[in-house]
Image (cartoon, rainbow over all chains, first blue to last red; front, side, top):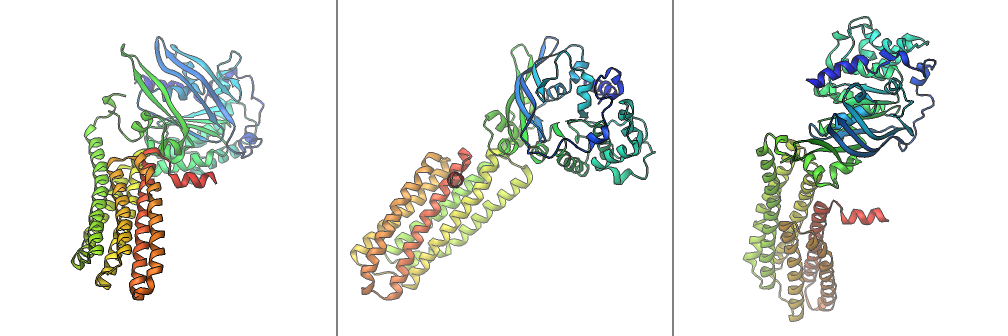
Length: 303
Length: 230
C-alpha cells in the first residue's frame, strides 16, 4: 500500500523532468541527437556503468539492504531477482536516487555512475533521474494524449528540436509507432496494457536517458505483451543499459545478461534485511550457480 | 529463507520425488541391461543358446524402460521448467539412458552372433581370455550403474582408468584371435572379433555414463573441459 503511494508520488516526480526547475545542466542539450545514439556507438558490452560498493540502505533504524557490491555493465540487461523483501526494488531505486523521496531512507556506501558518485554533494538528483529513467510495474501514462505523454518531459526540459520527430522516434524505438501513428491525439488510456507500458518506455526514452530501470515491467501484462516488452528490451540494450527487477525467473533467464540474486535474512529481532547472495552471468546462475541459496531459490526449493 | 516463501511445499516435494523417480528409472534400466549382459556371458562361455535367445527377447523390456525414462524427462521439463542442478540431472539422464540402451543393443548383437554360430567352441586360452574380457567389461558397466544409483562422481571419475584395462584385454584378445584364426572357420573368427568390438564399445558407454554423472554433480563435463583447454 505504502508501495503504491510511493509509486504514484515518484511517478509525478517521475523520470522527473516534470519538476526539474532546478536542473542546472542539460537545458541546452539536443535531446534529439542524443536520442539517435550519437556518441554512443555499439561498443562491446564491457564497460562498467554502475560500480556499486558496500551499498546499505536503511529506512529509519530498519536496514533494508546489507552491503551489496556489484559492477553493472554498459549495454547489458542486468536482472535483480529474489523473494519479496530481499531489497531488490530498494536497490533498483538507489540507482536513480528515488529513495531520496522517502524521508526516512538513508543510503550508505557508494554508487559510481560512469565514475561519479551519484550521491555526491554536488550531484543534482533530478539530473540523475533524467539520465537514469524508470519504468514501473503498472503502466502509468499521464492522463493526456499519446503525443503529449511523450512530449511532456522534453517540453519541460526546454527541448528545442522538432517535437514531432522526437515523438515519432521515441515511439518507434519503443516498438509502438506502427500501432499508434494514426491516433496520436487520442488518450493514452485508450491503449491496451501492453501498449501503455511501451508508451511509458517511449516516454522514458524521450528524455534521452542512458539507463533504464524497470521495476517488474511485465507483471501486469499477458504473455504476448510480455514477449513484446522483452524483445524491446533486447533491442534497447544496444543504446541503453537496462536494470530490471523481476519476480519471473524465466524472464530473467530469457532476457538478462547478468543476474543478481538477493535473499532476505531474518534476524532474531525479527529484522529482515536483504542481502546480495550471488551476481554472475545469467547462464551461469541458471545452469550452475555457485551458491546453494541461489540454487535453492531458482530451482524452487524455498523451505 | 523461510517457509513463508513457499505456500505449496507439496508441489516441490512432488517434483523432487519425480526427479528421483526418473533417476531410479535410469538405474532400473541399467540393471535390466546388466542382467542381460550376465546372461550373455553365460550364453557365450557355455554355449547356452537358450540364454542367448532370452537376452535377445529381453531387449523389448529394455526398450520400454528406456522410452519410459525419456517420456518422464520430457514431461517434467515441459511442466516444471527445471534449471541448474535439476536441469543438469535431467539432460544427463536422457544421455545416460541412451548410453545404457546402446549397451543393451550391443549385448543383443553379441547374443545374435552366438545363435548364428550355434555357440562357440574355443581353445582353452581363447576361452579364458574372452571370459576375462567379458567379465571386466560387464563389471565396468555394473560399476557405472552403481555410480548412477549413488550419484558417486568420484567413483564415476575412476571408470576411465578401469576402461584402460578393458582396452588392454581387447588388444590381447585380438592378438590371440589373429594367431588362432587360421584354425577356425572364417565366420567364427569374424563373429569373435565382433564380440571384442562390442565389449570395447560397452566399456566406452560405461565411461560416458560416468562423465554424465560428473557433470550432474560438478557442473563440469570432463570432455568439454578438455576441448575448452585445447
